[in-house]
Amino acid sequence: MSYIFDINETGKLELDFYFDFLCPFSYQASLWIQDVADLMGTEYVDLRWRFISLAQLNRKSPDWNVWEHKPDEENTYGLLALLAGAAALKSSGMDGLGRFYRELGRLHHEKKEPLTAETIEIAAQASGVHVAAAYDGSDPELYETVKQSHLDGVGKYGVFGTSTLVFEEKFGVYIKIMPTPPKDRALDVFQHIQLLAMVEKNVYEVKRLMTAESEAELKETIANPPATVQ
Amino acid sequence: MTQTAGFMDINNSGKLEIDFFFDVRCPYAYQAALWLQEVADIFGPDLELRWRFFSLEQINRKEPTWNIWEQTPGTDTAKSLWSFLVATAVKNLAGNAALGKFYQSLARMYHEESKDINSQAVLEAAAAEAGIQAETLSDVFNGKDRSGYELLAAEHTLATTKYGAFGVPTIVFEGRYAAYLKIMPRPASDRALEIFQRFLMTTMIDHDVFEIKKPMTAEQNQAVRETINGLKKEA
Image (tube, rainbow over all chains, first blue to last red; front, side, top):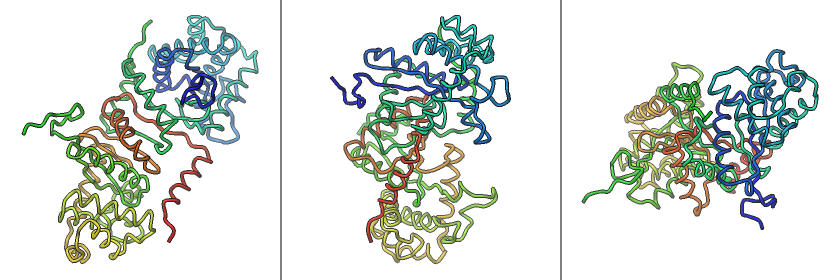
């Protein structure tokens, strides 16, 4: 049986969520999209966490690639966490990566812990994944995973920032959410974005205007996002 | 008669107020205007659609001391100025609805018929479609009527300072909630109302949502350019 939005005819809605651990908007959007996936159920939604490197997107030279550098080198911000994410994916699959992202996101964005090996290890232990290969450099495959994910996002969908949600491996949308919507709005916001992405081909951009006051308010929310349970 | 205020009528004016900021030369604003006019026609008296000025030449100026409203209309850096001056006269003579008609007519002539919007004859033809006789516009063309410069300065400044407008179309609900929207081409009539209601919800209710933007591949950018070019009718 296929559904109107199941254009891949896999029986599920495929959602690729492109993120960088560093991005505060990604983290809030990830809490929301996880809510949505939980509401819809794994029977209907396949939520997949995908890596985009902000260091790579913001690189100064087209010859420079973040995945050709070690995480302690200059301008590789976020790389260590991405490699750890790749290790979590390898050791524990997509669910493991999702659990790891939630933990590391909470520590970094709510508890203001830096994305160091120490913080990453705490998140890994709390979420039951193994990421040691990310900081001992023993697994070159992790670099390859980050590189492929990033190049896929940019090449196939034109990803320019995080978070970007891709429906059915075809329709990409960049979304800026802060903080995560209340649960009673989560599904409506999702359906709106899904309709814009998959149905309303005429709509390219919706952007809230910002005054100096609303910018200040937003900065305040980023600095002090609502705490998730833990 | 007592008006019952709607859920979204936070101003308690008995109507949903929408300010639509445009520059006649923007193809996205024109498509959004056609869509929003259609929505306003469906709503009828419960919705007040107000046409407001925003100058792209002003927002894109190179010098902070340069102002479009101090320029000579029709010059290379003041290509939309005549349209605002005549639009002001239309509004003064016949009100907001006539202004909307004038704007949509002039935008059609520009975007679909490739007409010169700095030609007096074209401006007069657009005004005529809004029910305005050419002779009543003579003080605009001879420079005696300066009200357009003042209105453009006031509305553009309001848009940037009160709402933080950076482009067109900028759409403001109830004098308070503002968003930029990029649509090309106008949605099909049977989708118009749903897009409107969802856009309204995002802007007025879902304050957590700041931006929704489709990433574009090279092919998609090309497709949009072709859509814009396709608006032009064969001569």
